Image 1 (tube, helix red, strand yellow):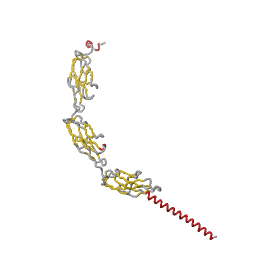
Image 2 (cartoon, rainbow, N blue to C red):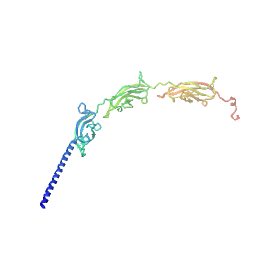
Image 3 (tube, one colour):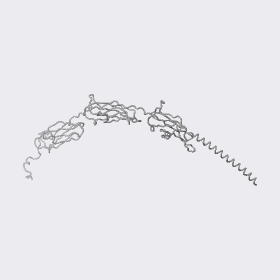
Image 4 (cartoon, rainbow, N blue to C red):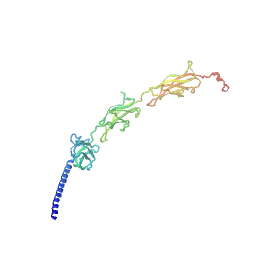
Length: 371
């Protein structure tokens, strides 16, 4: 019996050992296969270039990089970009289905010599493990793009052949290489190299600025310059001051005139109800003219009348004059809207006999005797 037991143990033990050897071989094969998958899934970077380095001198004003990512068997890959050499990603780029990527680093870099590092990163399609081939470097010189200063042309304030200006409106054309929002016109009115007024161009570069409220009348010299700012550095760009000299004069305004004056006198010159009427004509806007009435000949107004929008006026003088022969004087007065100068038509006279409408016989009795 003992011999039989030893025989059976020997037979079945060999079979178990054989199965164990077969399982070990399968595990080793799986490990080899997995290592091959890992190796084939490691991403690579190639064709790293500066997109805007057309002449190949390594100097660019737009630091845009491009390249190609081979993600191997991974379904997803990206590019990490380290701009400061700390081996930490500061920017990221994502390739298209063909593996091509581009990335503008303008907002990530300062001007001057640069060395950036890039690496492709993918994740193992089976294990999710991060895979990378390590950093690649790219060196270049990032410089601001040259921008020409703005220029002004066709400057004018509307002066006539004698250099006289009645309405000083500055016009001209601003030409600049910078976007429209980055340019304007400074106007120095007093020669201190400081802007006192500003003009802003329209989409076509045209400027128009009324300086009436900024200047006093008389001889003037103003200076004008275009100003823009570099869109990358913020540097002020200007073409320097240009001068314009002219004589700013107030617009001539004719004095007001009076017509159709009357106090309602009859053919004998008798007036029972002295209501002064007439019409004033003026080139000054409504509200700048009135009528002065002098009832005692001292050249000082004792009553006033105000025209309606058509220039017509009426004024009852019953309370301003006594009965009997009268001579009143009337004139229209206005004020220059720019200078405030008094403009007048001069005095016009009206003579008449102002009589009472009460029966003279009744005036002989005292009031207490009246019924």
